[in-house]
Image (cartoon, rainbow, N blue to C red; front, side):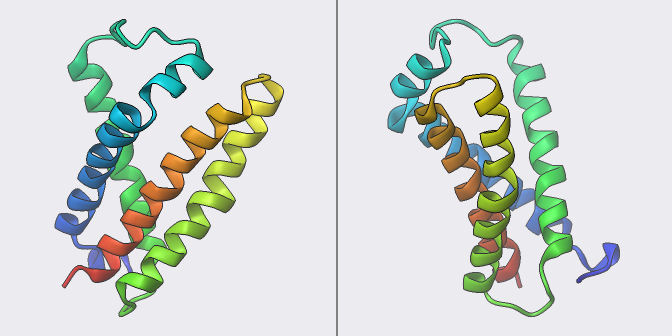
Length: 133
């Protein structure tokens, strides 16, 4: 496991930014209608001030990407990083969402959309961080 000083801040920044690209596609043209229907959210309503919403999301993405960088063994390739990301996304994040969604009686389809996003988010984090020179 890398030390704090071994984590490349540029790699973490790029990994965190990848979550925004993925999110723009995932919650945009790919699943916006299904997500809005399942979550009961009006897709045309503002979630709040954009700077606050996107700023908070980006800071949290940085924290998650940094944590992923700490988990990755040194000198592994992108495939190994992506596999570790898939495990983290599926076995930690998506399962935690599943527990909450079950008690909140949220639709299974919503869990698939939100959990699927986070699995892919961590796959990207792992691949980017492991492949970074």
